[in-house]
Length: 455
Ligand code: NDP
View 1: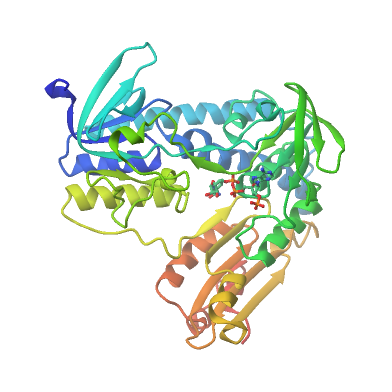
View 2 (view 1 turned 45 degrees about the vertical axis):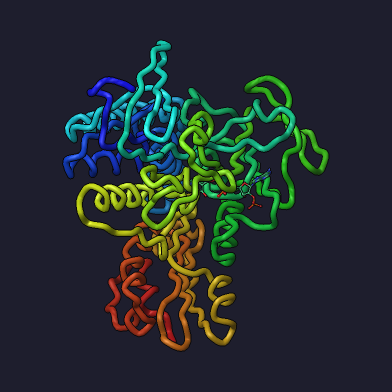
């Protein structure tokens, strides 16, 4: 089936973080590789996730900087953000990066096949192009890296709400937005929108934000968000949305009718399995994801999967590492498995949260109350000394009593992600509290508190 030119050593489905990394690395080892992509090259991270989100975080943070400027002697005058201009500038940057990634593929010698892919059998992927034409690719191996998609809750009118993808396409922002969810995306967008001047009400069905993170840290994020003026509603959700785009009425679980200009449904993401026709290839699905072994292999020996479609740790660097490990193992003669332990992560809320290792709750469950010692520093950073306002920082170490090993290193505060990235090296090397204490402080910084916590 298919011409010689349609035969590849590797067909990758999905040009997101995992697929791109695997395709380029396999090509660098000499493999003939095709990448199939129906949407824009770059995937969630580059096109509608991490990258444009972080740019919006930077843009929205100016609100706090401008508010504090007077205490440092600046006369700023009246300032106003034009969200439309910011959103357009972010889109232009995404276009630039999209072009760069297409160029990277060309330079790596990877063939980009534009269109949606579906399995015809275990070796053949049919690609449907927008113009209705089709091409069938034969892959000696196939890598599924189709990523995830936002999940809408099953409430009446859910189609009137935005999901995170939609936020990057907006031309302007309304005066008031309601957000459903208490996870990464909900908290990040609550802070972005608030920073850009939108009135934000966030509905969280549980009793705290950011389930799964150290609870003390999520409480500090909550405190900071509430102090900034974000309206958090716990043990509440939305049960229906009605009206017209831009002029909506949301019904809350308390029976209130809330008018707003938009509703963001940030209620989780799911693997993007639709349309792949995995059954034709005999690839098993379990719990709405593709299970793989430590070598990224599905139940079909020559078909592999990486990234969000496997629903393990849904973070860009993890998908990239999985893709590279797959390519190095299969094409580079350097077999290796990805270490999914001790993966650092950050929530770019304002205040920012970053973490590596075990939370207090996880450590207590594993080692018991006598097996764990906690160290904390809670303070207002020097940057906030003159404004005398703004969120307080929390730095926290979770230490195993028996060995002195630092099991978890957590922070809420300015530059938390940058600081925890470095701390993750030490934690990965098995650093003890004594190692932290032995490290000379760099003064005056926020992170010096990690090496000066009294015994
Ligand atoms: P999360 O799983 O983090 O959060 C989903 C939130 O929605 C939870 O608060 C959940 O509540 C709530 N929820 C789920 N279903 C419903 C419902 N039917 N009604 C009301 N609330 C509901 O998902 P996100 O969408 O925020 O993010 C998805 C993933 O994307 C993250 O887990 C992360 O892997 C990745 N991501 C990473 C970022 C980063 O690294 N900075 C940024 C953004 C995303 P409950 O807790 O009760 O289940």
